[in-house]
Amino acid sequence: MAKKTDGVAQYKKKVKEKLGSLEEVFLSAAVGDFKAHVVVPEEEDEFTGLFVGIKLMTDTINEKIDDLKHINKNLEKIIRQRTKALREAYKISGLGSWEYNLQTKKLRWVLKISFLGFSKKDKNPFLSF
Image (tube, rainbow, N blue to C red; front, side, top):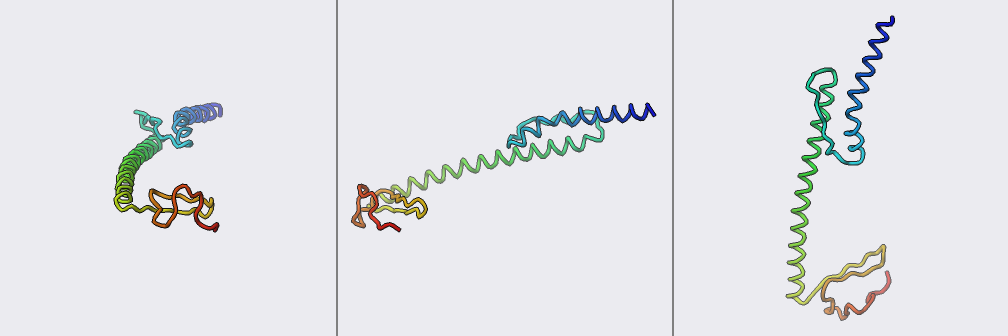
């Protein structure tokens, strides 16, 4: 019976060591950081599939994050270009635009709104909503 108990204790120790090596990966992932490196042990055992799966998962997530960062950077560039073009169109036309936030009751206007008979000096030319 002692041999069986020793075998179980050794296996528990092996499981703890193997899974313990993944602790940093999971702690980092829990806060949105998937950069922790997953090392797949060279010796194949019952944990190899788990390590390979976690490595594939973190690598894929990192690739997707990098893709999204690139897409976001491009979208920010497009927004800057379109905002610049819109401002130029406002300037050329002598017009502007405005928006009123119903929740904050704040008025925001862009460039000229004098075509409505108001100037930017007017704090809130519109009636309270």
